[in-house]
Image (cartoon, rainbow, N blue to C red):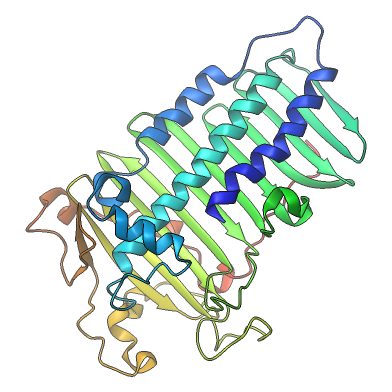
Length: 357
């Protein structure tokens, strides 16, 4: 999915760029990309500290191999040992989404530079169309449709940038066979304060990895010299001996929620496992990996939250808040609990692409 994502969205929006320009003011205009793209590129260059960026540490080969194999935990002894690998792969997925968002908005912004402030309209070619509306160079929106179905949306609103894509209604030759929907939002305050959030839903089941997630949501915030975030994954057929034809139920489901905060020295994280019918997170602390022993047929009491992952390693030091490695990370709070979505709401969460501006 991650390798195809950028290709998919860029191909889809290349149609927009070609046809939006044919209906704009003949007087021309200037590109809208300068400020917006600069902001996005600033976030790109600083998305992850060393402790969460496997390309910057000695664990690179192991994490890369794990991601390429189709089994992210192939290099780990077990699910508990795998958590630092997963954490760094979450950040790498966020990077791939952000790269795609930056490419899309840069391209769309160039085309919207030809639209006068206050301009709007619809361009149609074949069975495709694009609605566009521009207030200023940093305030514009477009909707891309195919066969009257919205398949893409870009909204630039001052310092908030949103992209949505519906892969289910894009030709499979342009998606590499991937399905589902994507929503990503970047909020930029300054180089040291920003957030990136994305949601992937409706990912296809593969018989080679039936337990893989059907949806993923990740949010990363940077503020006060720390990177903090939350990762939520829903696997509809995680528990039991299932195939892709197995109808998901509460009993077969598993939600993995990860809270994390880090800097260049270390990352601290807490992991929780819950089934999809859980509709409150008031007691989330009771659902750590140390509490799932019965489900794994053994004693898991040693895997107490949080774990510490020193930069440059794939070590999961359970029951450790990094106090011996970095006082700042040790004392840091996780991001706001309001960023969680209950498992019950998460597995039903939908991405709706607007049909009109």
